[in-house]
Length: 551
Image 1 (spheres, helix red, strand yellow):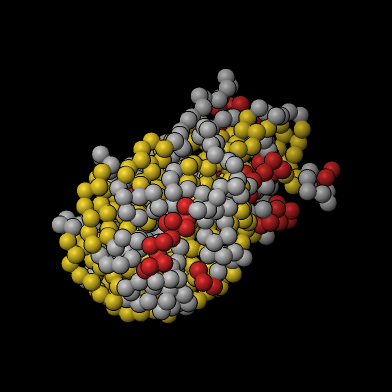
Image 2: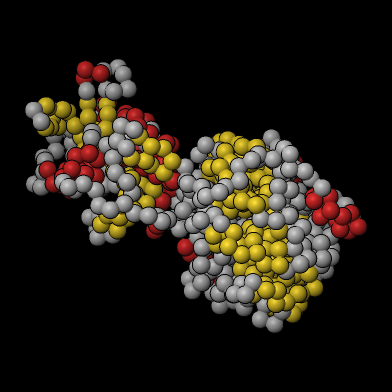
């Protein structure tokens, strides 16, 4: 929350927050773990859930892919790799951990290529020149098949053609078909002029019956993917900063400075001015810079990570927070006083687009597992918004009440956790339906969130209560509460996971908690109002900015 008053008023804020009554809050507290977004088909008695459900819904649903006909299970693919898969009547969907944080984290399986190779091991001679040809497969598309391919997702959905058009006879029926890597297209002249003129063949049902004549393998359980896998202890640091000495950078929003701490000694080793109302320190996608968001000065102070020194100030309207898309192509400034998300080119810092958000207090967010959208909270009117990071437009919203602050996606990418400060807990958001599906009471002033180094737990800073809650992602239960005192706000975890660092927003200190016994081990005095500190460098492949969110 941005601070508009002097320190005396700041110190009264915890008491004001405690006076907020619960009468208008949604009553969605969870008694058991919230399931990921799910849809079940009575026709097949099978359900699709999580990111597979999201992909299925966004890419045609039952009309395109048919109903689910298996549970999720682990399958060895043509190249010998093992993926969590689920069969549908017209295809197979797969999780791909190797493509985490990209649009390819869920893909249709190569059933078209597999089935064509099995049916026609000698191949089929080319018979049509076609309107659009591909050197990769030496095959072409024409007419209605080409149009369907172009209008319904192209190569991303169906892959490239692996055959020409031909008449195929099965079960006494002849159908005009063309095989693609991930599907089989069928032409039905009896449905000419309707959506059924071109359909996908029942390649999922056929392949399942052939591969598993006695039924599907045993259903798999647990998370299929892990969005946070690259931040685990022992994972490599980004190459450009792998050999840098660790430092903790602490912005002070009232002093307009950044304090630098050596975490090996817990000593302050540097301090320099940045700008008015310095809120967070955000690592860039290339890890070459840290950016300090100076909301009162409308600048981003750039720090060279190799030297740890300021290099320049960049103009940006009232930046409260700074994030980056998972592909690193956009910087997103949460311009809180303007209630907008401002998309920038992170190299030139030219403004790409300003997106007004119809709420009050837009400030914290997190990216989806495929990077295609973000979830952002509006602190002052209890709303949460979903925003397309490619088209830069609003996709939906939900009112959760209270004060939604920090946001983190679950390891499997299916749910979002939102610290809700004046409701004293964490809202759980279904990003497909955009609704609150659960609430975990933590303690007064739930504010900052960070994922543990083993990625099993979510740490919640309860700023008014002076505690840290530990939530188990698998069960959504609070498994520990650490009493540390003070006003813990934004959080960071040391690279080995043994320390949790927290800024004491109203006490002028940074707290260091030993995560093994959950006890306060150090206080480092840094100034008046320390806020979004970052511990740099850290393990991870990409930086999402904020106060050091890596994946």
